[in-house]
Image (cartoon, rainbow, N blue to C red):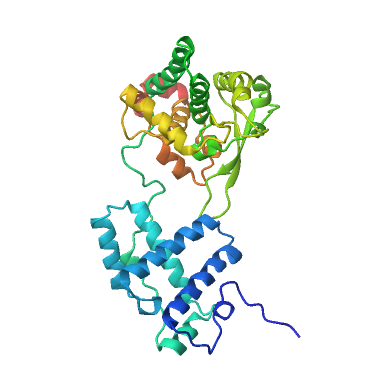
Length: 374
């Protein structure tokens, strides 16, 4: 006898058939949410944080409509989106996240595989429908939808940032004031974030054991390759790993100085974290953002710049220096080269050079050169 396998999230697992409840509508909705949670975690292997966010969005939509899924309509979604855009001023990427959560939930409860349609028909005489359609949701037209003001730092800005960070260390040491060790750590962290093209979360998540030798680049010693273990996940899946080849000797020297002179004075309890706080705990992305913001304000940089601008700068400067775009794409862990292109904001000098080369290439050749080529 072969037993039929019940899929994760089936109504029969979370709602007993033929049983009445005091508040039947709320009991069914709660069972739907629990079933969807398990379908995402057990069936689709999504991360708990991603699932929790989606559940919260669906709950907020229910609160807005003051109705349950079997009473929702596309008009309800339209009204909610109008409210979110007009009053809360949510960004397009956030709106798309909200719509994606509602669409995913509706796909789940409307699917014949999970039995919720039958449960709703039996209990309420109606059933859920999909309320998200092409004509009332935002299309995903590009990979980057952040603020238009976000851009890479120019080379002069980047050098000024590094010089200022180093100057803070020197000043604190000369004045015999506390804070020199954290300042040294932060100066090195900024350089590492740029030199290996890291996201803020990737940078602060590094361990001292994440660097390896590269037989093809012995000049970098034990820092020839960086193994990024906490790369950005796709669609709520597990974090992605990638190996980043070391390119800058000055960054290796800065990192080695930090590891030899500063980190031993800050680390506690045999922690493997590369960047540790004054309390000995792993540094958080927020602390990197706060230090970057303080330096940005002092240097009077564009307030739209953020630690992520260092990653943009890495991509842009490599492209300007003639590095193969495919190699850059692999270095930063982009699935598509179009995403890498979005990160690229080449300078006016670079554009002028490319323009001059293009004009030269299109210029008609003198007759003597044409004759020689025959």
